[in-house]
Image (cartoon, rainbow, N blue to C red):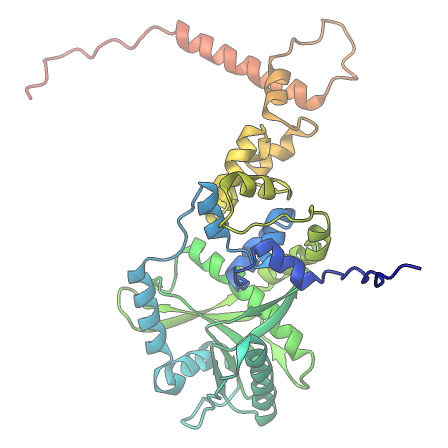
Length: 396
């Protein structure tokens, strides 16, 4: 009989431990925010971003360690200007912000008075702040009074990972409607702002709307407005003005894309043991680790993901036609590489009179495009050069 004690059963690694191992032993998790969620939902097929965001990996530090840094974020001047404008909008107990909300979205509600509520949302940690926000929303709805929640904390589960989101403000009107407020520092000139910036703000606000809806479902009489209040500087001044923005389309798209996201535990389970995205590791190890997770690069990633330059380089090296855009990739059908598309374009036409039933229509279209291009170049080369203009020389 053996005198050795029985071997202890193997400890099962929890998802939290696994994600901590992926980040690195001394790397704190980077929380998800609405901006990253909007970008993640815009490219749900990218398992690389889903895993890295779900694990809380700092993609900016990872990109720098890989040798492909991306410059993201606002300048210090823009941050200071934005903070100053937000403080002005919320000054005096949010009186001006509530007035704008009543004017543009208040409907038949009584205008806000000096007794409007601004509850204290202070609590320990994001979980505590989210619970305190949910309680304040419930109390505001039950009170039936104008209420301003300054930087509330909302919880939303994304691909099996909890995310804590912090909108600029949420306004509760006497009818129990909750409205997301987005405060931006770009100007609204003659009542209109830059359409690209408004679109980005709408996609970000749609994430907040989805998070609010999770809470509103547990509060009797609560309703989440699908029109958010966008507050910007008026013309070239620092005075606030606002406009309602309907985010129903952005909300539907974001919800559909989030439902398609692969759960983080499924992605983590497919990775080899010992793999880590710790930026302190050598660049060669990090390159292998990143390559172990599938990506779905598209040119739109350059404006939304810190790893875009690294992924673009790898996509180009692999000859992926998605590097030229999703529309190009879709048009090429079964031709999955740029080299295959070029080979199809340069292949000879079927013999005259031969059956073309088995010919790939994409290859036929590429051959025709290449033929038309060659003919256009021949015509341009055969065209005589333009004669020099007659007349006196320029006096200068």
